[in-house]
Structures are given as C-alpha cells and as structure tokens.
Image (cartoon, rainbow, N blue to C red; front, top):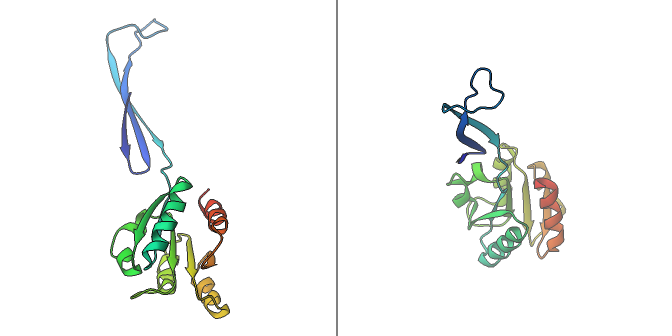
Length: 158
C-alpha cells in the first residue's frame, strides 16, 4: 500500500485481489483498488512570540527537546500577519512588546480556543488578573523554572 499525507489524515491506497466465486481465498487475476483514510496526530506546534531573540531561541530549544515543533515570531503583529494562528496548537508570548502587546494578543487568541501562556519580567497582581480575564491559561515570571513551562505544556498538549 502507498501512503499519501493530507492535513490531519493519512490515506492508505493499494490493490486487493478480488475473490473468485466459490474460493475462500482470492486467487484470481482481478484486482480492486482500495483506499482507507485514518486520522494521524501530527506533532503539536507551539508558537513563540517574544521581541527578545535570546528568549525566543531558548524557548524553541526547550520546546523542541520535548518533541514539539516551534515557530518563532519577533512581534505579535508578525504572528497575526501569518497563518501561524491556524497551525499553532499553543501560543507562548511575552507581554511587553512593540506593537500589539501580549494581553491584546491573548484576547484575540482566546476567541480561537487555543491555549496561551504569557511570560513577563514585570508581573503584578493587576497584570495577572487582566491576563486571566483574557483567557490566558498560565502566566510565568521571567526568569522562570523551565519545569514549570514543561509541566504546563504537557498538561495542555499531552
């Protein structure tokens, strides 16, 4: 059988011998084209949105070490300008960035139902409340223990 990939599914295509009347096993020379579609879970993709290149790279390395895919964006506006929002299974974003900030991004992401994690060096109770109101599922203060992020990602995507 030959495997053909499609978005979220795999179609197996092959030939099967057609049984001859009166025979329990297919022995004739006639073949029938058969195909079967099966769902395939692709590797989850996590979008990282942060204006600090070092943070983006470090998060990407951590994410990939967990077996997930990572896509990187310098700003929320760059992220929103692509189709990455459709492809991402989870979004990790900084709060304070040029252009659209992480809270505004979180409000837009919340409409899609996709999980979002915010990170910031300037955590305050008011900012945390605003993030939770925007549908953020986790809020981490920089620098954070990588295990906190690993556990949260495994909960959300595992």
